[in-house]
Length: 382
Ligand SMILES: *Cc1c(COP(=O)(O)O)cnc(C)c1O
Figure 1 (tube, helix red, strand yellow):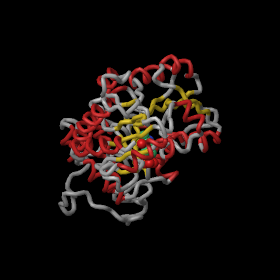
Figure 2 (cartoon, helix red, strand yellow):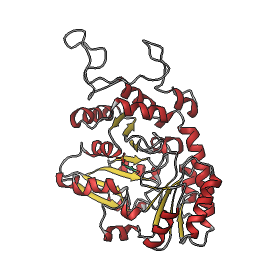
Figure 3 (cartoon, helix red, strand yellow):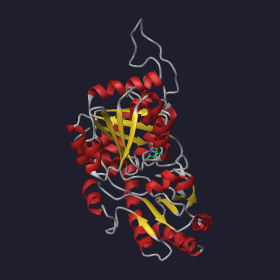
Figure 4 (cartoon, helix red, strand yellow):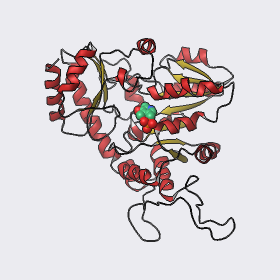
């Protein structure tokens, strides 16, 4: 449906009435298997690991939102990243953003590395460092932008150009911005990945993950990963993401507006020692954010000085919930060092700048005055 604008796609791509009944919502096909018309003659589905009509519709919606030609959904964001790296072979070299989501680093360091795949973390804000790290064995450059939780940006177009010249493909974890605020495929990425658990679902009621791209051989490769590895998304959770997607553009507008307001408030607050938000002019990559993104989003990280300060702050919050995850309608605050980045050693956290005084906010869609009042009283408690 390329002729439609974004909000229309969000409501209608993949979400057309059921041909048999006219139901305006995509039915949840709770079935593991499908009756065949004869030997080898199916109606398009034979077994739900390979394909399920509800899941197919979600894949149709997600490919439209990211501007891809195929999408494959998985049981979680981590299952999607597993499927992304599983086709690599012994001796292949994988370059990864140096401060990725903790779970990604855990998968690469504690599982994938044991398969003889060389993992190298590179500061991808530094293009010279990337150029130096690329080698003939490099098959994939995995980018996360903005990074979690320090909100560092990577220039996707520049990375894609360097990687492609070296014969490597580029995948981008687009979870923090959602397809509404950043389109990595149009910037030259080969594969986009999301934890649909976050903004795409938007209601914190289910996990999921997706890979999207434009290369036909990838469509087959990642369908094979669904069938062979089995980490697929259930029909019910596919439905939840389909339902969430309808309001994605509307929610992202509010997330973005609230994010900007909260960041502007925190930037002026004396108890906030440092703030990381690409929407602020003081962010070192504000210009890149303005050029590469369609908004600044609602992820904000701040430095409160100590673990004790964070503890008091989190205990005093009334509207914000002290919980990990992000991208839901409700505002969350979390202590990165002991939640999303708990899997890293203290040395590695120090190396990438994740201190005990960091708090990450996922600003929800509540009224921004209530959010700012809540933050005001919690910061006073420090
Ligand atoms: C949450 C998250 C993941 C992992 O997704 P799950 O659905 O929790 O498995 C990967 N990348 C980023 C940036 C995330 O925020």
